[in-house]
Length: 288
Image (cartoon, rainbow, N blue to C red; front, side, top):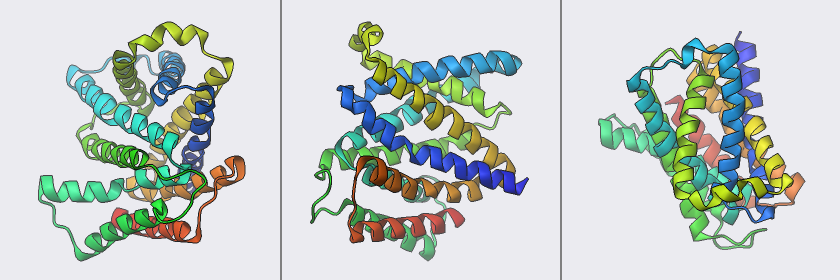
């Protein structure tokens, strides 16, 4: 069972790490991050609804309190995180945007210390310092990039990490025995609703979207949302959240390699050193 969990976690990380390339390609058609996400969510919700009606019809009857929790998770967590991450990738290299997202364990540790008065050890402090020091190396403000460094992009990247840290903390309040696909399905509905509220002018143009944009969004929905999320939750069931979250750091090198081989994005030696420092710091934080 443990081997199966390890395989699920690795495959999930590979799929998630490859998302950046598809996101970048989605922007070639002059589509904004929010518009790309709306199309992606519509496709993902349609697929998950079909699966849920076939396999989880009874589990779709959720309690009111759980629906409210999923609404909060979908709007303030998932929607903000994905919009910010997609926006960051519009301004930054894939690897840079991804590593900024992975400052979230440090934000979780700091939030737990500030909000819940949890003790913070010297090791945690050093790991937090290591995470942000590594990010400074990855951002590499003092040299050239395949894309110029944008402070707007950095801001979006850090916002995605803040929203993701909120998701990690708030998810602890959702303890109901509900299939992961159903949780993902319901929370994604609320994410889509939030996007539609702020992008109402885009809805009439949905039917005229180029086939390339729709196919790209479909690939994101299937290979970077439904499949990896299902594998991630399955991995947690087999090997637990700590091992799964540590393996999930594979997303960073996968994002770097896929961007290098497919899109020609190149990083400097200090940036690769920064990635290594961030991965080491994250591993220490998650073990702590």
